[in-house]
Amino acid sequence: MTVLDDIIVGVKEEMEARKRLVSLAELKDRAAVAAPALDAWAALGGPASVRNDLKVIAEIKRRSPSKGDLAPIADPASLAVQYADGGASVISVLTEQRRFGGSLADLDAVRAAVEIPLLRKDFTVDEYQIWEARAHGADLILLIVAALSDTELAEFSALSHELGMNVLVETHTEEEIERAVAANARIIGINVRNLKTLDVDRSVFGSLAGLIPAESVIVAESGVRGADDVSHYAAGGANAILVGEALVSDSTPHERITEFKAAGAAAIAVRN
Ligand SMILES: O=P(O)(O)OC[C@@H](O)[C@@H](O)c1c[nH]c2ccccc12
Picture (tube, helix red, strand yellow):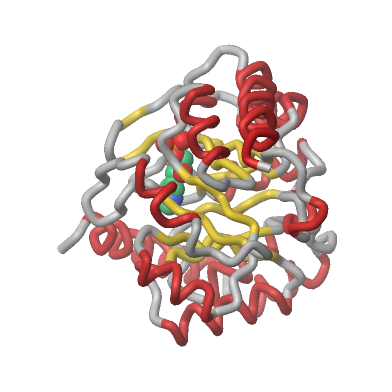
């Protein structure tokens, strides 16, 4: 069993427990009265012809299976405000409980605090979680190609779009990019961390980014330690970066984001 398989077992158990507390019908009622989803695609730069800088997706991440506790986040709302002040385009809230220490309560707290698009970051394996995301104010959800069949990828994308949300489709291999493109994904992430082993290999980004059609927003996920990594991803074709650990463990995350955006813009100016 891979790490990913193991995580998903826990995700399903937690979801079954939530299903007993909140029915799908109840979630649909809540989703119907939620404020409409914000346009994460536009926030991430939109059509290729108008993209001009590097966008930052800043993540609220308490813990990870590879590193354990990252930082005590007493107040996710104030961290989110710092992210937004620093110029994050989207805030990612990890809601997976067992391995990442997240929750829907974190998503609620962040939703109440900022008005920029939110990614509900979780291991989506059931439509229930998509309704849940929308009911709790998410604008974007994560679909991990390695965890889904082509049918699930298509159905989950369609439901998300029906609910007005965008989808970040996460890949790690050439075959997964082909599957993401076949599913018409327009926001495609390359996670440099292999979720089956948790190994990080930053060179994966540069070797795969060229396979993604220019119309899609390309997100470099994981492994940003500092501005050099940001420059590396931007030079390799990233339109956006997704950063967790480096921001939650920094005392001035807004300054880090500003620094990352400057490094990204400089590398993109050279790239163009
Ligand atoms: O903390 P990092 O190395 O900056 O990584 C952030 C993000 O990419 C990572 O949290 C992540 C990428 N894909 C995921 C899927 C599930 C959980 C977490 C992730």
